[in-house]
Length: 143
Image (cartoon, rainbow, N blue to C red; front, side, top):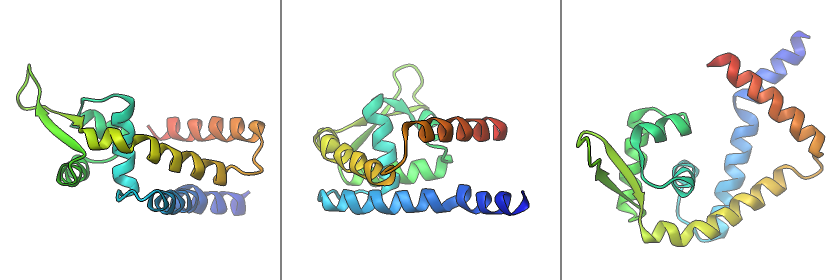
């Protein structure tokens, strides 16, 4: 059992995530998209729900405030997002997609779908359900 725990620890703490991230980065590049996987994850959340606060983006991407600020700064420089002060509380910034970000959505989602298809090749639906259930329990235990 100790060997399995040891192998799981290394796997869960990086190998799968790193490999998936590298493949997604390659697939984004193949689509001629000049965004990092970190930027993509932020854009993905905004494509799901545009106009989120920086705090909401921290929570949904599991990143700290300085990391989110840096990512938003870079996305602003690329003309992909815009910071807008909240109508009710000027201390809060809401992040909105620019037209350029909306234009790359389809290509980036194609790259992401391709990445998941490559990663999940020969993985059964049952295996996916078990994996999701176990990872959900792990995450719940650590909250």
